[in-house]
Length: 357
Image (cartoon, rainbow, N blue to C red; front, side, top):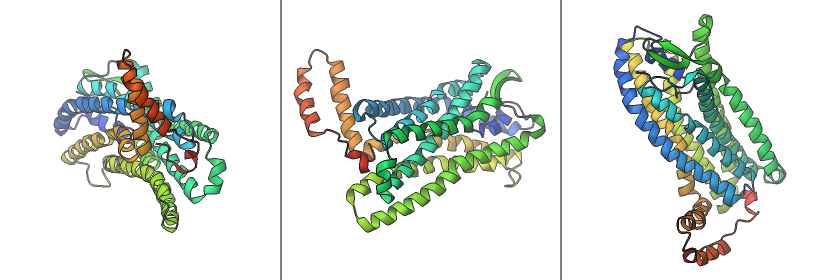
């Protein structure tokens, strides 16, 4: 059995055992069995909830919010990055329980898409944090800088960086016959295999954890200073949602990054024996399971912490879903919807401080 190659750059490490690249690991059989039974149903749940939630976010932002602000642009791209991440999950779920049956091109494309979704999501959380920082700490400058045009331009740049960061997943992943099974795993130049592995894991940790953490700490320290001085309730609400999104990201991804670093640098942590390696491999699966659910969480955060999002969601189901399902009884909904629309009309004033959802 093979494991999922959905595990970011560190997947290159775990497949050393699961894909037969290292023969002297008989104690990893239990982990392989665990992965083959645990990964497919987990990924299926993430696929269902993540797909529904993020598609709703995209529809609401486009259809009801009309992408009127920089924040809306970033939230849309965050949802798209989660959808990219989710798109590859069915393939990795199948691979975990069977073998790679989708060809070399799909192996490369899906690996690249997976990594692009991961890096894109992190980068757009950083942009959302900077967006809050500008809106509150540099409010006058923000009036000129926080426009839809600049939002689109910075989003294009960020996607370029995310694609660049995901290139190793595309370049080094390939299909190979490992024993009786076909695998989709990473294959580095043999002369520098260890160095490549360590470099890419460090890159993932630095880009996905260290740099975002430093930026967010700086931004929120400055934001809190302003909020403590001004005691503006509207600004408190404007920060709350993005702050929750940031905290949740670190709660879900930090354990995974730590375990992957431990696995990659086993010698430094005295984990280079069979039993310890198997325990860390198991920890990778468990922490990855926690991290996977992150792409389902943002829509839930919007629903509970974003008052405007709840109102737009209500409008969406009333005006679009309910009427579509009951085409012959629009009169049941028309008056109610008309009253709702008249009492809740988004204004361009939201651009100044609203968090968009």
